[in-house]
Amino acid sequence: MEHTNIKSTPKDVFLHLFNIVTFYLSVIGFITLYVQYINATFPDILNYYFSGIAGGVRWATSVLLISVPSYLLTTWMLEKDLKVTPEKRELKLRKWLTYFTLFISAVTIIVDLMVFVYNFLDGGLTMRFFLKVLVVLLVATAVFGYYLWELKRTSKKTKIPFILTIVVLVVVLASIVMGFFIVGTPKDQRNRRFDEQRISDLQIIQNQVVDYWVKKNTLPKNLIDLQDNISGFIVPNDPDSKITYEYNIVSPLAFELCANFVTSDSDFNTEASPKFAVPYDGVYKQNWSHAIGRTCFSRIIDPDLYKDYKAGIAPVVAR
Image 1 (cartoon, rainbow, N blue to C red):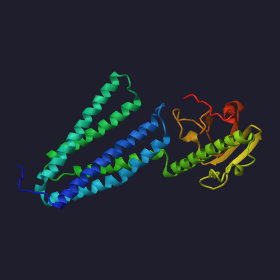
Image 2: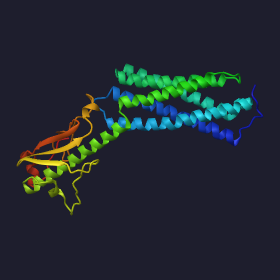
Image 3: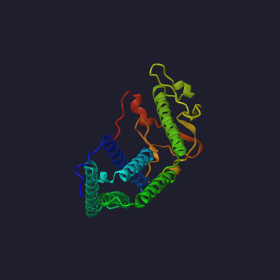
Image 4: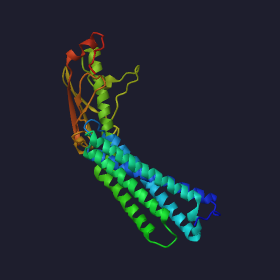
């Protein structure tokens, strides 16, 4: 029987809205986390960027660490209030939010199944896609089932909410810890970003060395020769140790650049990850694969590739 005389207080509005918003954030963060895990475990050979996956994992983990405790706290506060005033189960605000969540989860399930069937008929059903569809389906079904139970729930004392709280905490913590094995610990990711910056610095230096040779027909004797007060170019140093990168002249047309790396790209790369980076001139590709420790990259300048530069004409590069 509906209690039409029960009205929402400002406290009720705050708790219910805050509770549902943090719940939605938790669900989105949880799905995002597992989608990124799937991207890392089953990489797409045409679209794989580890830094993007690691960033997605960090964002989803941050959302879960804040939104899940907030949701559980407000849920506990609402449960405590309902024990004192059981009639508040019939609040219109509570009913609206519950039915709205049921609607969203039901639509999500239907759309998820539609996408699954479409890709199955289109021949695009891969393990990567199937797992993503499965994650969304399981989460949406769990949400629908929980709120359907919540809608029919009475004021009778039960241990189900406590059990669900423990299950949620265990699943969330396990999911976050899983990320340390898939994308590495925060320290691993920081070290990787340092190494990515080192590669970026070496690419810039390489480009400047080639440009120096094009203009002067000789390699610079040292990296200091590359600095230009007019253009404002300053030779970058190692982002962590601040030590100057190693530069060696091998022959009149060959040189090498060296750096000390703290990670190996093979620890993060998969068969789908790009092992080549395109220099800024875009003329050819160079291999920037590296191991832990000192790694040198040998470069040989092909004069034929830059003869148009020397003539003052920008070369036409096929795209």
